[in-house]
Amino acid sequence: MFQNAARTAIGLGAARLVAGSLDLTHGFWVLLAVLTLGRTTAGETWTAVRSALAGTLVGALAAGVLLYGVGHEPHAYAGLLAPAMLAAFSLGPLLGVAWAQGLFTLVVATAFAQLAPASWQLAEARIVDVLAGSVIGLACGLLAWPAGARREVRRSMAALLRATAPLAPATVGAVLSDRPATVPRAATWHSLHRLRLAEAAYAQSRSEPDDDPARTPTDWHSVLLTAQHVLIGAHQLPRYDRSGTGIPPAAADWARANADRLADATRQAADRCEGRATRPLSGPAGVRLPVCGPALPVLVDLEQWLDCLAEDLRRIHPRERQCVRAARA
Image (cartoon, rainbow, N blue to C red; front, side, top):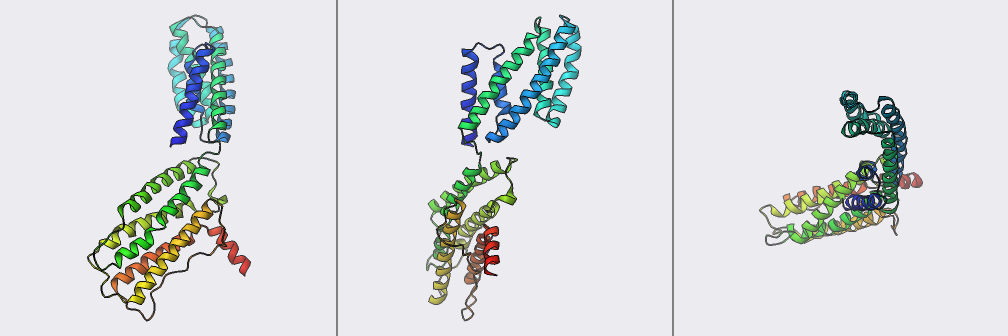
């Protein structure tokens, strides 16, 4: 996503500026810390930074003792490098950030000690660089979208529902047309674009540990399903080889009225996604063919599609609907 790319780019640029301005030893460790410790929310970044600093401190102490005790013996470091790398790259991802940073500090100490004589100051430089990278990453997390994808999910889901709302009346109009017609391509492409953005935001939010679906009053997955069902109907229903000829005017008016009602309910759901609803919650009722009307195939298809959309819309805010039912009871 753009937010993650922008946050990472700003962090790397700031890390390069700090490392160059302060002439830090092994300044690339600052950039590496920004890359490995940056998270999508400020809370996650702070948790990762605390663990990384603790692990780096312990690893630096162990590396300092190792460098002081072994001295300038490249063969000893060569023998320790392989086990250290095996432990760091296998146990680090399993045990967490603290273990990963601590073991990686031992790896770089044994590696650099083979290239040139090294002392405990190498461990000191490692601590300073990781600390600088942690501060930069934490600052970027606080200044650039600290809440992660939560606000973006609300905005993208609301935009998705508003984009798909006009498709229901347009689809019904195309199906009931006397001549072959389709839903305007611009409207469907715009809705499809909004769907892709909403899916990306939803995937990002689900990857954040603090995101608890049980506390979210809106079922974002139902929003995505609603949009997908709208797009499927808008794409498929008008393509059948038939026309609106022979449909009684009363049945056509019934279909258009239900489509307009669902479009209004979709816009109302979009307002609730952003938390700025102005009307009381009133989920759309199911769609059923008039008892006295003809059961033509085109009307049956419209009935099933519109009723499916009504059910999808009712699932978007399940907890609010339960509260309304409890209050009425």
